[in-house]
Image (cartoon, rainbow over all chains, first blue to last red; front, side):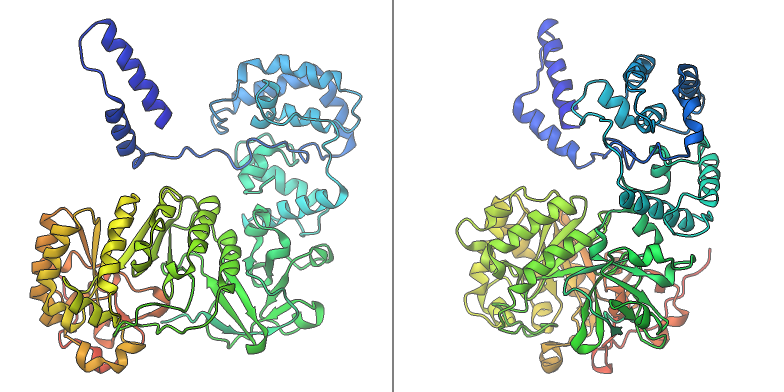
Length: 211
Length: 392
């Protein structure tokens, strides 16, 4: 907010001198204005997980991998994205238009057998689209895979969150079984997300699970 | 009904640290390290699996005694134990007393960081008489507590004792809050004397976005103020401290406890504040908490709020005209004149608040501060009676 006002007042100053209509704000006046404004400042909330990699997103059964390797399915994902865009609001900094190009990165990494980074990007986590656009977010590397313990803990947290939100994942046992997967799909449907039954970043946000 | 902060419990072996009680959603959020979490099994609809048992929680809390057989780090709260504790709360285990102490209660209005039992004033009506003990260990504990308090907690008081006796450690604690609780309003309850020490007040300049001070002032001159706080030279130091704080851009509230000698000179005190402390943002007129030293000095201190109405109304008018916000704390609505009732706040922490039988049929009960639960007839206004609002 501070920056915005400072920029705005700078613009005002420029404008003021160019058409010589006079009044420019002094630094002190701007400072006072900023101070007064900061009392009313609102903090824009961001989704729970938006600048971190989700190494859990791709945890799914091996059967589904083949379909995810084709580019056409990727594109269909991105159209899903725009179709359901009303429910998922990305931070303003996410460069949505550049997404089709960014898939080249994951196709070159197709040797990566589990496909986790790939499906991660197809789920359009804001973090990943940001890191691909060359921002300062840490790079997405193919060795960002959860250990067995980490994965089990994450599944347990997801199961606990499902319970607390009224879905039945069967048990809090750290196993991604069919009951947990269908509870996830149900939650995803209820939130207007793609019903993948996997732990995508948007799903974790909806569950209040921190990466 | 009061909800005591100490709860009887049978304890296994738990770490001697501040611990966060977590239910499913807190566990899911992953905000707090498991080693600092106690899993509240009463909130789990799901059966306890072996996988969950194996996680490195600091402890497991339940109201069934067999928890003690299954976990070496169990907390068993018998069903008849008085007091509640639940997810979001922060507790400390007291094994020698077979108790848990609730150090932070989520959703409560009276949460505080208790800094020290020491004080350099000795106020006639002190509700929490100071003790001269070496309790610097509290600082490390408070730092742990700050890390486990909910980040959306709206208000925290920092009190004691006299918090500024911590010296640098108090500024460090506030700084720690700015890292973990930047959105929480912090209110330091201090007599302000140490703020007059060279350079001390400046330590607080800009270190937390929502920091303010509540500083008591009991008279317009040293004789009355020093008498009430039972400390020679306190008035001069407090006034100098208030000025130093103002220079360090601190937000300042003046707190005035409505004991008899203070009420008798309330007008001159209000005048003094208007003239000399115009930067004060808020003045709180506060009913006495009838516990601690106040009980011993009841005959010298008690004045029925009914008899303080005129003095309060006068003071409020003066302060109001100077642009200061005014609130009345700890005084029930029914004893206040209509003109000043709007200044009264629901101020008593709910864990130590109670109502009297007469309050049952009162239409204003929901908005009333009520009474400290240690109220006695000697501290009860003759004006207590249910207020009936006409339905238009």
